[in-house]
Structures are given as C-alpha cells and as structure tokens.
Image (tube, rainbow, N blue to C red; front, side, top):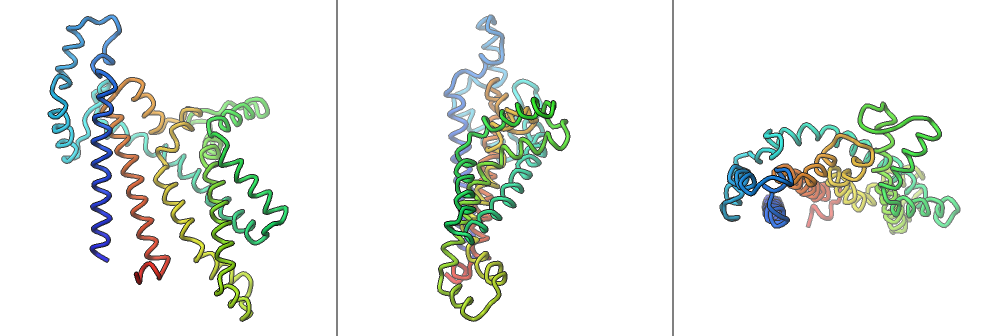
Length: 305
C-alpha cells in the first residue's frame, strides 16, 4: 500500500514538472515578451532595456534554470505589469473561482445524480427518455451560448443585468448554472448507466428474492456499488473547477482566476500565465490522486488487490 501511494505521488510530481517545462518554453516561443511591455512606437533601445531588466536576453536554459529554482523555493515570479508577486495576485482571485465552481458542482451533483437514479429505475419510460434527452442537450450546449441566453433572458424578462460578483444571488446562480450544465448532463448519463449495470447484478436479484425492502436495496446496495464511475467523474469535475470556469467567467465578467488568465494571455504576462497553468495542473493531479484513494475506500476488491 505504501509503495502504491509513493508511486502515485512520484507520477504526480513528474506530471507537474512536465507541465511547468512545456508551459515555460511554449510561452517564450510565442514571441518576445519585452515587445508586449512597450508601446508599438517605442524604439529598439526601449525594448532592449526591458529585455535586460526582466532577463529575457539570457539563453532559455538560463531563464528556465532560474525560474525552476525559484519555483522550488516557493517563488513563482512577479507580474510584468504590476510588479506584484503572482502568487498573491492569483490567490486573491481563487475564492471567487472556488465559489463559482463549487456552486456549479453542487448543482450538477444534486440534480444529475438524482435524475440519473430516477431514469435508471424507470428504464424505457417517458421519464427516462426525457432525462436522457435533457442530458444530451446539457452536455452538447456550449456554455458561453447558454450563458448569453441567460443574460439576455434576465435583461428582457426581469429587467436585470447580470454581470460580476456584486449582482446578488442571481449573479452567482446564473454563471453557476451555466458552468454546471454540462456536468449535470454527464452526471445524469453516468449515474443511469452505472445504476442499470448494478441493478442487473446477481446480488441485487438475490436481495430482491430475500425480500429486502426496495429503498434498502437501492441506497444500501445499488448506489454504493455504482459509485466508482461517478467518483471518477467527480474527481475530474473537481480538477476542472479552475480550468472549466474560464469561458463562463469571461461571459459573466466574474472576477476569478479564469478572467485573470485571459487578461494575462492578452498582455503576455508570462509569470502569471505560468503560475495559473501550474495551479490548474496541480488541481487536476491532486483530484486524480484523491480519486485513486477513494477507489480503495469504496471498493473492497481494489483494496484487497
């Protein structure tokens, strides 16, 4: 068990190192960052001054060594535009993104799993077909388009313009519903298929033959055994809380990490972009590691193996 856990940790560390390395070199291959810091009509001496000031005149290997060494010491650099440490800039935006993503995940989990179980118990009924049709619609609908429809509907019907984090409960629920729509459809489909597979297992038939009450068969036997695919999807959703909110934050002018990432890419603020990408990769890696640990807790067969 200890060696299994250490192997997972080592794999996570290697994954983060690859992400850091690829992000570093790809950002610098996109062009000279110093040119983005000066006006278009600035002379070459001004560009050269900023290139030397920020160390962009050094070979890439030297720049990478300095960046990686500082990262190991907990320093991710400073913003090229504000001069503030990027860790503080990003951390200031994280609570807003977690609030938005957490609300979206709560909506998707509560509704998606519930309607998925109902659809499995009413297989081939009109309710089942309606749930599956809604799931396909929710998964296929682009979140930016659905968000624009919500904003337009609120403006025309309720005479309310929703945007930013200061619009009250509606200003949170609308972007959260937009962000959670695709997750809701995925949870409903995964829950239905996993429940159907579990309901047809011999131990469920044996429980029914023994006269075990319906509610006990479903919630004590079927749901726990159908949980592994759902746990996997939850882990992916947790890991994508930051990355998945980028477009939604842009549409609703939500002041989170996603909006900060878009502004940083537009202004070529390298240190900020690199740290946000590292944060997203770390979130995904930790979420996958937690999912692997939950497998051991949930399924005794994996624990014995």
